[in-house]
Length: 83
Image (cartoon, rainbow, N blue to C red):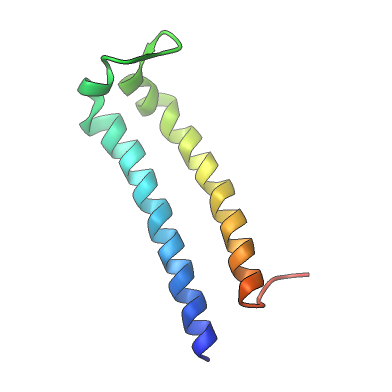
C-alpha cells in the first residue's frame, strides 16, 4: 500500500509542475509580462503578443508530450504500466 501512496505523490507533483509551467507561460507571459516581452521580436512579431496568441498553445502541447513520457516512466517504476 505504501507504494501506491508514493505513486500518487509523484503523480500529483508532476501535475502541479505542469500546471505551474502552463500558468506562468499563459497568464504570466501572455498577460502580466506582455509589455516587457513586447520589446523582443520573434519572427517579426512582438514576443508578448506571440506568447498570448501561439506560444502558450505550443507550450501546452509540449507539456502533454512531457507529461505522457514522465507518466509512462512513473508507471513502469511502480509496476502499474499497461502492456
